[in-house]
Amino acid sequence: MSMLIYDYAHFMTRMQQKKHDKHERISRVAWELFQKHGYEKVTTRQVAEAADIATGTLFLYASTKGDLLVMAMESALREVTRPASPLPEDPRNALRALFSGPLHLYQQHRDLARHFLVEVLRGQASEATQKNIDLFTLTLSQVLGQGVERGQLRPGLDVRQAARNFFGIYMMVLLEWLPSQESVEQGLERLDQAFELHWTGLVKA
Image (cartoon, rainbow, N blue to C red; front, side, top):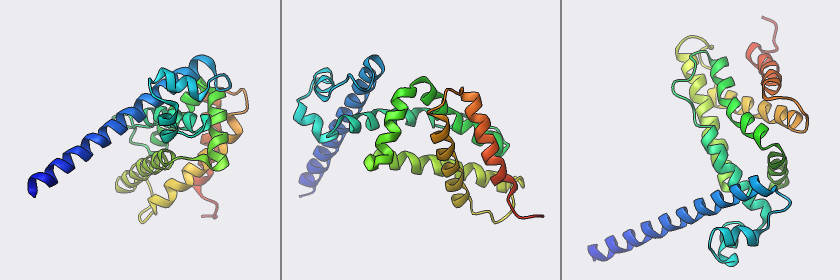
């Protein structure tokens, strides 16, 4: 019986790995095609052929072209939101460094980023989107927690709520910045101004 359980677990692990590998291949191929041809000109059939899979198999991972873009962009975002080591000790500078990664990615692929946000805001956010948001806000909360430990931020700060607040502010700034022709530095300046109000608070000391 124990051997059967082991064989089944081993089989499931292999199946999960195959599924993960196929997901990554589809994501990589889709990203390459979107970068080369633009969002409008790429088709799901092209992606399936380039990934060497049947169209029906592709639809198990992404049912629309919008889903493919979300999958590909989320994969790229995972790379650029990984914190550099080490981050600046000052919480303001650390958060600025963390948010600069996605802004640079969006600047480099501005048209794709616009389509991506449309898909996300239309309610097409995938499980990968939510995982990325959760991981990123966790990183933000860890940075803020370190600021509390160093005495840079007030004791008892709800770092999880503060992290969610900062992410919400970032999204509002992103929606204003992305349709414009502003540079990344100008986007970061917008972010600095919006964050500063949150850093200092609204209540008179």
